[in-house]
Every structure is written in C-alpha cells, then in structure tokens.
Amino acid sequence: MNRVHSLEKLRAGEVFDLLVIGGGATGLGVAVDAAARGYTVALLERGDFASGTSSRSTKLVHGGVRYLRQGDLTLVRTALRERGLLARNAPHLVHTLDFIIPAYGLTDRTFYGLGLKLYDTLAGPLSLGSSRILGRHETLEHLLNIEPSGLRGGVLYRDAQFDDARLAITLALTANDHDAVLLNHAEVLDFTREDGRITGVLVRDRIGGGDLSVRARFVINATGVYVDALRALEDPAAAPRVSVSQGAHLVLPRRFLPGASALMVPKTDDGRVLFAIPWRDRVLVGTTDTARPAPEAEPRALAEECAFLLSHARRYLSETPSAGDVLSVFAGQRPLVRGKAGAETKSLSRDHSISIGPGGLLTVAGGKWTTYRAIAEEIVDLAAKITGLPPKPCPTAGLPLRASTPILPGSEPLHRQLPYFEAEVRRAAREEAAQTVEDVLSRRTRCLLLNARAASACAPRVAAILAEELGHEDAWIAAQTAAFQTLAADYLYPVD
Image 1 (cartoon, rainbow, N blue to C red):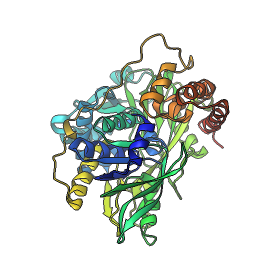
Image 2 (image 1 turned 60 degrees about the vertical axis):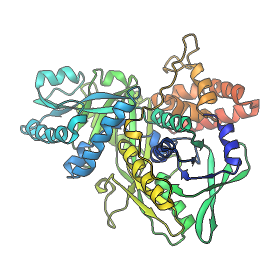
Image 3 (image 1 turned 30 degrees about the vertical axis):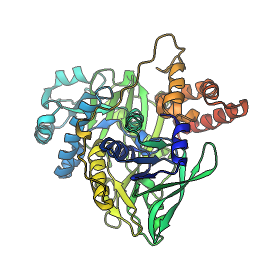
Image 4 (image 1 turned 120 degrees about the vertical axis):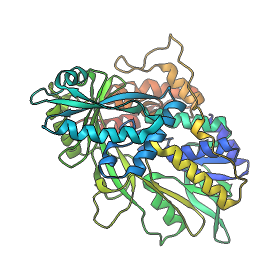
C-alpha cells in the first residue's frame, strides 16, 4: 500500500462505484467488503487510518456482557457471531482471553454464573469456550494480584482480545490487495453535485498539498464522531444524529496483573463495567463513559477520569498502583446514536443506524469494532441496491485478513522499554502508508500507548528514518519530533 500510487490513481479521474469517507473500523470494513465483491472503491481519511476512535478502544472483540445486562440480546448475539468469525479470519490478531469476575458478595457467583451461561448459549457454534464458577483458591490462582480480603470465588468466561490499530491497518492492506484505492491524510472539503445529487468530493492532500476531485456513483459517510459535520455539509438543516461519549484508559506495568487472565468488574460507581486486561506485556485499565459537548481530533483523558480508573483499580488489586506507576493514559470518543433528550451516554445503544440524506449521502452512525464486518455487509448490500450495481454475494464472513511479514532479526530496537524495532518503521513507510512520526509510534506500532515517555524519547530517531524513506529534509525531522513530543505529553498521568 503506497500513498503516492494511491494519489496517482485518484487523480486519474476514474468514477468509482463506491466512495467511502472515513478510515476507521466501519469505513475500512466497507472498503474490504466492496472491493472483495469486485466493485471499484476508493476510501479517504482526513487523518491516518484509525487515528480516531478505532485505535483507542479497550482492545476487546466481545459480545458485551454489559449489553446482556441491559437486555439487548440481538446486539449481543450478533457481536458474539462476529467475534467468532473474526477469530477465524484473523488468528494472527485475535486471540481468546479468560476473564474473571471476582465474587465478594454471597450471591455474586450464582447471579453472574447464570447470566454468563446465557452469554455462552447466544454464541452458539462460534463459542470460544464455556463459562464456569470458580472457588476462592482457583480465583486467586487466575488473578495473582486480586484483593483477597472478603473474596468468595469468581466466575470465568471467555472473550477475545485484539490490537485495534493493527487490525485497522490489516483491513487497509486487505482492501488494497483487492484493488481498493485508499488515501490517508486526505480531507474532504466539499461535495460535487449534479441536479442536487452528490457525485463525488473535493479533497485536499494534507501531505503534499493541492486539491483533487474524486467522483463516485455513491458516497458513504463513515466518519464516526464527525458524521454530523458531513451531513451538515450535505444539508445544513440536518439534525444531529450522534452523541459523543469519551472512554479513558490507563496503562500500567504488567506486575499489577501478572497472570494470563483478565479482571472484569461488573459494576463500578457510575454503573459501568471495568476491565483490567493483560495487553502487550502491560495492563490496560478502562473504561469511562463521559459525555462530551463536541468531537475532538485529539481527545485528552480528563483528570477525573484518570482518578476514577485509578481508584477502582486500587480497590481490586492487592498491590495497588499509584499515579507514578501509570505508563500512559489515552482516550477515545464513541459516536453513539442519539437517544431521548437528556439520556446519559452510558444508557445509549452501541448498535448502529443508517440513513440516506437528500443528496444521496449514506451515513452510518454508531456501531462498534466487534460488529464492523456485519455493518459493512449491510451497507454494501444497500449501496448496491440503490445504485443498481450488479448484486454480488458478500465473501467477508470467510475472508482471511492479510498477515504482515515478520521482521527479520538484526534490526536495532527503538527503545529498551518498547518491543519494536527500526525495521518496523521502514516497513510502515514502505508498505503501510505511514507519513508521520505519530502514524508510526501511535498506530503502526503501539509505542505511545505502551509507554508515553519512551515513545517521546525515540521520536527523533523515528523521524530521521521516515525522512530517509520519504525524502524529507532536516527541518521536517525537527518539526515532526517537536509535534510528536507535544502530543506525547498529553498521554502522561496526571492530566491537568
């Protein structure tokens, strides 16, 4: 996947069957689906692929135990099916993980055990394994740092874990393999129209400069928290469809959860579930559900969110973490379909909705990583029907996703506290369309999330390697280093 080649293809003037705006989970899923069916498709992303919500999740491919409690059985059943399909199609990125709900109350094991048996049943033949009730001793063996005082046992169930940004890049590479044309750092400025109907977009290249026009038979708005901005560009009278909810996470050293199992707290002070999950030799603690007035390109974890997560982690861990132990903090913003006026974001459905605007723009709002493939299938089916494209069956339920070639030994490590190498920076530039230090350290690798200080320290070297690969001068290296180090400061705890 080469950005220069993609730009050349877009400038050639082809009229694409489908044009997708938005390079997150849903948009990339649509590009894979449409291209795999044989339709011509282009995708434009204002930032980098998955630079928004889709790289800032809790790293879970799951049915949603919380949604089960809310009675949303349809969403849970769909998500569990998609979880199983994704585990089959991308075994190099998705793996099964044991989750333990600790039981401190007299009836906790029975209550949660019954609920999780329903969870098992809804998964059907794609189940990852059966849940079971644990005694106190077995719970302590699974959760080596759990608070033992008052512990009566626990309940074990299985879900799946993944690396969200790597899956996004994998989807981009898979779409590219099927002849989709994808361009990151490409901002849509306006729609082009004929007789009031949208026929394409005017785009600005944010890397090389200059504008270009991309034409298509059908345009899809999959911009996550920004869908309302594009809808307003189509129709200034369009009422908002999305509420913005922020989820924050803390990243801790592995010693705070040294076993192979994850901790799930079924109800926190604000009514949410809380996870502490082993991830890339760290522990990920999250998440929150904080309503925000408007979407932000670079959301910051709020001080109160960080304090909330740290205080709950301290309740359940025997060796308690302090603010000084936190390696990184990050936040993502969810595009939730609006409910009734005044409804709290934690009560809003994680399902999706699809609408068609007066100019023919299809907008998808809501959704979540686990169900991205099913959402994409629905969108492409509808788009083909509306545009009169020849109907073609969806192949993605059994479509293996691209696996990256392994890095050969001998490359220099980026930093002694990070599990990445200089060769991965070069591959990101040559094969994965990485254009900036942030692209590499935040999404092609996960350095920024794993250790913000270490990521900041290796930024100058990464900038120098990218300059060699992409043909930039010393001034670019200095500017990129300064920009990334400013960004990395917002990933440190405490947050002002």
